[in-house]
Image (cartoon, rainbow, N blue to C red; front, side, top):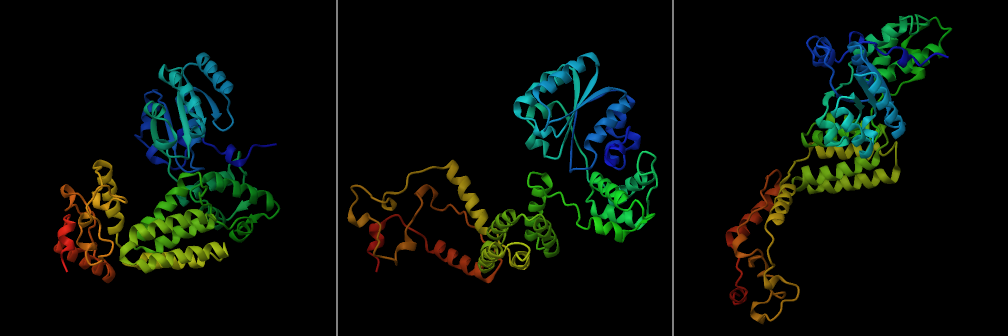
Length: 421
């Protein structure tokens, strides 16, 4: 039984790596490292199927060094100890740790002294953000290198090679160019995904002679979106949705919404749309904020696939609405101030003031005085957190009211205020 096509086609040296020219191109860091025969501990991070572990192995082979491969998901402490002993025999050795972000802190700490004393050079591969998933001690001992999604042309190049290679499909069956380009388009920059489709098609249509695009479409027609909730691409899509709405790019926002809808992630969509509505639209169009809430309720009630309809309406509404971050920035400013400047509430604002004369107490029966009362201590009475964006007629009306009250002034002398008629 042969290994999977994606495994057989893994590059043996850096010269065979497709794409990633910023890492393996002429005069790149890895090339210079190989030329100088000076290995380094590295962390390759990026989306699935882009060649992180493959490049690590190709780097080790190009250096001519012995390497040990482990997967953090399946390896035990005993496996790691065995790798250390092997490294002591084959020195220098490279330890390649796939899914390195899956190592718990104890296992990460176990590696540190051996990386430090040169028992082995560590090459880690991760789909997670290394600044979040890896502890600082590991990061400080490795160089972080980003592996980017492959272009459609690079995926096509890899598929073309695999289709005719003696260790690949060896030309049987024959794939038309449009079939390979269709697979490349679906792959989302993931070479492993593309090669897996190619292999499935080679088995299903082994007697067809020639495989065209229509035949491939019967095997796979859904684009490969890296939308696992634990993966970085998921959070990037959520972030891109909010930023697109903030930038009023309705087409981009609909695209990122569609990605999340394809993944069926209604929870993330609900949270992000609500936050976006209040943070970025806010006082600019409170009605749009309320309509967003109603759209989310409707999406919850009908579920997917129909949920895309109210969600799409909400995204278009938010994108093209007047925007204002005035309320969001105001509360953030107040939070910063409150954390640095704690003070006692004035006596007349307390729930149950003690030993206070009636004339100095809060006038519950005088609504005409409420907006004339000073609610911050004298030292901070002129502090201003709210700064209007004046992005809509509604917000302009709020601003006019705000400025009117600022101009009228406020007083902490409640006895004097009560004498006013």
